[in-house]
Length: 584
Ligand code: ARG
Image (cartoon, rainbow, N blue to C red; front, side, top):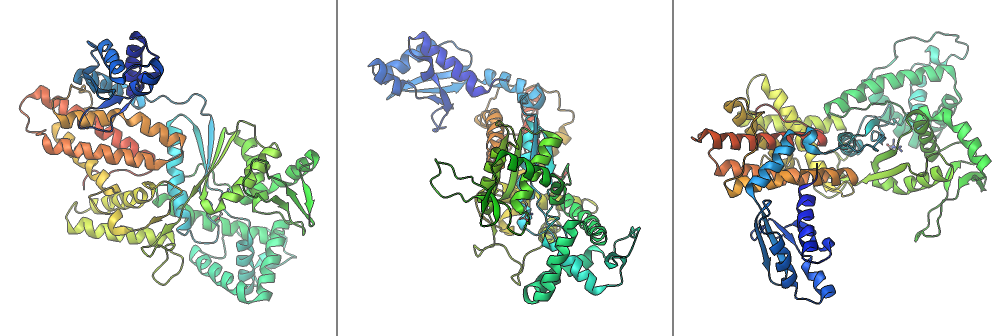
């Protein structure tokens, strides 16, 4: 469906052309003076220079050609040469009736969207999920849903950190605690037990202790390093133990991601990229892009146009070990072979931007992707506490995601109960939905790259620019619709009040908001849009007697309007990754 702005730009451009001017001057924008008009065209001002005429003359000429156009209720040339426009109510209703009845509000999927991989997990196995991974999960889930809305086949890949030193630390620690286990017996011929020798709570205790100890106990650190190396060489007992760590950790991670409404289509990890490394290195060598540097093998990625130094990407260290970058490159190879994506989007802390710059450039030099394959790092900022420093627990430690979620949930539950929003069985469902909206909207309303301050009081408030405010708006509409009865088939009607018209005009701006959010991977644009839309919806609600309206025809128009508003809001919050409760 043609965007409303394009539609009226087309009309105004045609009017410019009919009056003898370049049609390009007829471009229309949303008015920045809503008190004066709804849309404006400023083209007469630059045109004046070219045609050596007073801008007001040009604007008047164009205005004259628009006379009688049923799309406008007002076309006014005003000094010094603006064209102020208002839409005809019937035209607006007709346009929104198409929006209402078209699939996906008339937003067409991109036929060339293809497959898009979104890498937005990055959780490290054996370590508890902490809030550093929260932003990746929240932003990534939304980015993925937006891509999918526009027709992409999306694959969210959790890309677990499952191949590093943390594995060796756990193995060394378990070996010390239970040396009698068969995993450490080199003569053992199998099969290894099905059941893991530890639970998730054991792991949660083992890893931090081992990590702390490795910093002060050199001998232990060396054993952990050796275990990591032997694991990577494929020692059977260690590998069997590693699989247990994986199973136990994954089950726990899934549970936590589920609570966040975050779902991955692929549960691969860094370990799954390892088999791709030998071939990749051979090809890189054959291409002659691997350069020796102090015993290491690197790819030079500096480009002449760079204004700053971009250091070479280290692929193999002098001791033969491969690195984080090697794994990311091999993962690109794996993804291209398995899914042949058009795009790979990485939702990862912005402090890793140099890493990704090096990896992307190396991938292109190595021919791992097609020239047209898009590789993009969506770097996000830090979630800070009220002191402006990275968010910590009260005792100054790293906050676990589980703790954060349960803190928010308790806070919201108390509010729900205190205000008697719902009772009985509904309390938990409503609480969970409001808590998730508070957390996610509080994050997503900021541009991803921005740092922001986590402020529970503010995020969970029912008023202001918050998730709960958006939910409240939806729930209020749902309750009116429920009391009205069947509303789904009612057609849009011409607005009779300024509040109705404002709400309708806001509804027409949905396509721009969603398209920009998709193009820029910027869910914050959807937040800004629904905050504005919810504001107009609430104004309309306050100024209009909907359920007590006596004229049934008029009432049907009101109901159709809030029905469409509800559907748009619900679609948008689904793209953000949360949903509204039935009551609140
Ligand atoms: N596991 C890494 C970390 O915790 C993040 C991984 C991000 N994704 C990637 N493809 N490098 O820092």
